[in-house]
Length: 447
Image 1 (cartoon, rainbow, N blue to C red):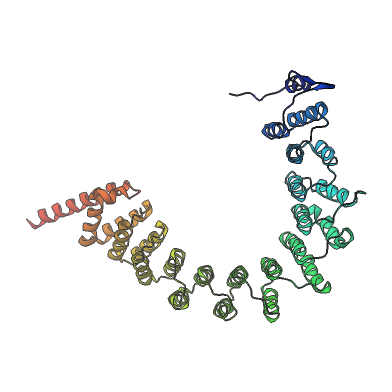
Image 2 (cartoon, rainbow, N blue to C red; image 1 turned 90 degrees about the horizontal axis):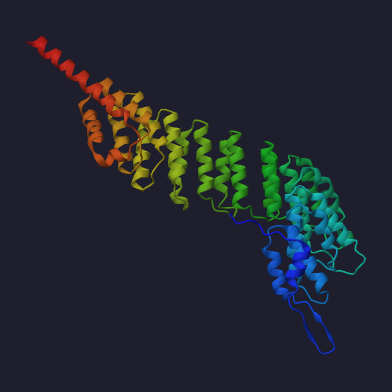
């Protein structure tokens, strides 16, 4: 194992000081290398304190050497990431005008380490500095708001900062409001989020699609679907076009509130309103219909999808088959399984298990065997419980045709490699022994 390189400041001074060379009339200067070399040394150190010592030694030996600003930036970030906040702040004060990139990285680092107060302190010290500097950029201000908003305890400070932003040269903006609307909505404080939304109109600012979507998502999480739908109408009346994620949120909430008719109407009106429904929207409605015991209505939705330019996927068919099986519509479920397999959509083994279980429960063992055969041919390994159901159905019904199928499956090497069960052989063996005993007793009684 390679041990980390540790050294003292005296050792660093000796290492940096090579044989001094003197020119006529000038004292010898220690050779510590170029600024690029110093930058590489600082960047290569994993220990931030050692990196700082390298910087200090280089600065003391050659005060006239113009070190790269990137060296100081790298060192400040190293110290902050290592939790040495005092040292990083001390070095930051040496910079007359820190770059926005450095400050942005510092804000995120402070927030990630649970010290958003340091991010706020750094920003306030920057804007209150007596030295002339340009006002903070709006992007940097939003990064500070994000750093504060990541901690619920800092949300009041972030809100106060947002309201006073013009005092330090940052104009009010929709994107800055969106940061805090999202933060308050995420913590469940919809009232404050809504007040910030209304504040935009008071400031003669127009909310964008993100503002509406964030607020509608918050309302849906609070089960205030009607208010969210009213907000959607307001959005449309103002000429905005909701994005796909907005419609997904509303569809999911309407389905969970069992307002399936409204969800279907919303899906039908999406294209007219400028947003083509995609597979996520259709699957959301199919899931909602099947969850409420209406798989036949879900079948109609699925059948209409190709005409609307959207084709069902694996999730569409799997959800529908599970929904049909839950309502005892096993024949239709089998038809959709064969349809999806014809489209090379291979289902999860749980889909086959649901169908096999349902078909065996109503005595349709031969159809259950068809399910097993179809899924095995597509490489789907049935679960052990699925095999148990089929074997039990064959043994109970004493049917020769399914029995021939089961024997075929057990004897074919290629199919056997795709199965997850070894117990089926034992079940078949017991069945064949019992059947042979019955045949022997029957022959003896005939004689």
